[in-house]
Each structure stands twice: as structure tokens, then as C-alpha cells.
Image 1 (cartoon, rainbow, N blue to C red):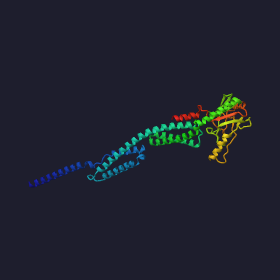
Image 2 (image 1 turned 90 degrees about the horizontal axis):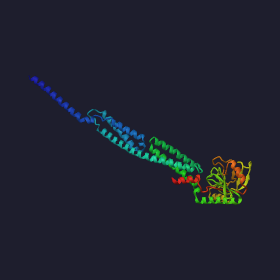
Image 3 (image 1 turned 30 degrees about the vertical axis):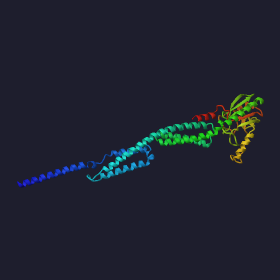
Image 4 (image 1 turned 135 degrees about the vertical axis):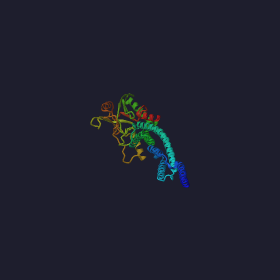
Amino acid sequence: MRKVIRVFAKALGLVVLFSVAWMGFLALELHLEGSQNPPSVATGSVIQKILNAVQRDGGRDLYPRRFEACGDDLRRARFEMNLQLAGTWGFRDFSGPERRMDWVYRDASLLWRDLSKHRASSRSAALLALDQAAADLEQAEQVTAVSAQEPYVRSKLAAAAINLKRAKAYQGCGRYDQALDCARESIKASAVAHTRSRMALARYDDPGHLSAWRGWIRQAVDASRTSGVALVVIKERHRLEVYRGGKMVRSFPVDLGANSINQKLHAGDRTTPEGLYYVTQKKKYGQSKYGMALLLNYPNADDKRRFQAAKERGELTSRTRIGGLIEIHGDGGRGFDWTDGCVAPDNRDMEVLFRETSVGTMVAIVGSDGGVGPVRTALRQGDSH
């Protein structure tokens, strides 16, 4: 009987010991459950997607330190988590990696928020800059179309057009900062081209020049009352007007020098001179390179004074010559300025001029008569913007 009791007592002790051990194990598992099971990998995946989106939208270049810090912290959190996963159950501690992952998620979310705000602001600024760049380029092209486009001005116009095209491309793919930068470069280039062109055209709106030009026209018109015929060439409108007895009786379109917007200063500048001249010789077919021609007395006294003053200022070299052989000749009507400084109506109009003029006929060549013309219109449009 005692033996049975001892066996029963041992069995009961084992049961109690097992129960206590089992309850202790359950308590330990409950106590360690939060730190022994790894956190969800979804958080790391979400963070990586956020960083990928930030990089795609240019956030890595805009916020390089914050972006790199988030990437480093994410890699560190994943490393620490893998380190705990490799450890023995019961001795793991995922609380540290989990806190770091939460910090990274917070920083990445703030980075995305700031980038989104910046992109919204940049998008609005880029749209405004694109509109301004397009308007400025159009305005610059209008002004330069009637001016002598020096290579520097042409290069600036080309740069403005190229940068505007790039800005539109960047805008289309959501790269608003780059779009804004290119639009601003386009605006700068257009401004240079516009300013340089307006400087070349400014004299067409200058009261002093307009007064002198109108004075020359009056003298030519008055001369037609005594001599019978006088000619007036208005460079801005590319017109040659014939006056007889103080009244205009004919008006012909003419081609001018390739750089006709300027005042002629020296040989080879391909500009049409401005001033009061007269016909010194009438050349028939075969006597001129371009059919019939009326040779003018360029350079006159004013041309010589202007040329000498430019030399004294050091604007011309000692070898530069004043030039000559300025004619009103045929072979015009091409629709663009191509001569070396001469005035060129078409052959039919030239024959009329040849019949109606004589040696000594006064010819006034002016930049503008102060009326409506492409140069003054372009200047007015520029002032209105």
C-alpha cells in the first residue's frame, strides 16, 4: 500500500511539475510574444515604394541628404531585423528594428509630403514661365524680323527657341524644376535678342532722326515743284515714291541693301545710305551690272563727315574706305534685301524711272517718314508688352 502511495505521489508531483512548467512556458511566451515575432515586412516595402517615388520625381536631387538618410536607415533597420531573425527564439528583440522602421517611415512620408508641395509649386511656376517664355520669344522674333540680325542675335533667338522646346518636354514628363530652369533660360535669351534688336531700331522712333528725315522729304518734294521730278526712298516701307510738281504720282516697291536697317557708314557694310542725293549719271543697259541704273552722288558731305568722325573714334580701321557706286538699278522685285547698298526696283519700274528722271534729279533716302511701317509697328508692340 505504501508503495502504491509513493508511486502515486511521484506521479502527482510530475503532473504538478509539468503543469507549472507548462504554465510558465505559456506565461513566458505571452511575455515575449511582442518581441519574438518579427514585424510585418510590409512596412519596409511601403517605405521602399515611397523612396522610389521620391527618386522618380526628382526628390533625390532636390533633397539629397534626406533621401540618403532614409535609404541608410531603411537598410540598417532591415539588417537589424535579419540579425534578430537569425537569433534563438526567446532571446530575440525586434523592438529596436521596429522603432527604427517607424522612424524611417515617418521621415520618408515627410520627404514625400515636402516633395509633393514643392512639385505643386514648381508646376505652377513652370507653367507661368512657359507662357512668358513663349510670349517673349514671339515678341523678340517680331522685332528681330525687321532688324539686321547680327549673328549674336540669331544665336540668342536659337537658344531661346531650343530652351523653350526643352522646357515643354520637361513639363510634359513632370520634371517641373528642369522645365522652370529651361523656361527661364529661354526668357533670358529672348530678352537679349529683343534688347539688341531694339537698339538697332531705336533711331526709327527717335524724334531727332524723324525730324531730319521729314526735312529731307520736304526738300525733295519742294524740289519737284521747280525741277519737275524728285524721288523719295522710304527704307522702312521699302517704297520709292515719285513726286512731280509737289505731288506723289507713283510709288514702287524696292529691294535694299542686305543691312538696310542701318545707316551706311563704310564700304562693304551692305547698308543703304540715308540723306539728300542727286542723280549724277544715267546708265543704259550694258553700262550697269543690273540693267538700267541711276548713279547717285554718294558719299555726300554729310557721309564724309560721319565716316571721318567714326575713324577718329576708333570705330573703323585705317584701311577702311567710305565706298561709293550707290545706284538705283534694276533686277529688283525679289522680295528681300540683297544689294550691297543700292536701291533696286524691278526692271519694268526701273524703265519708268529712267524715262522720268534726269541728271540732277534730287533723291531723298530716309529711314522712315514717321508713318505706319513694320519697324515702328514692331517697336510699338514691344512697348505694349
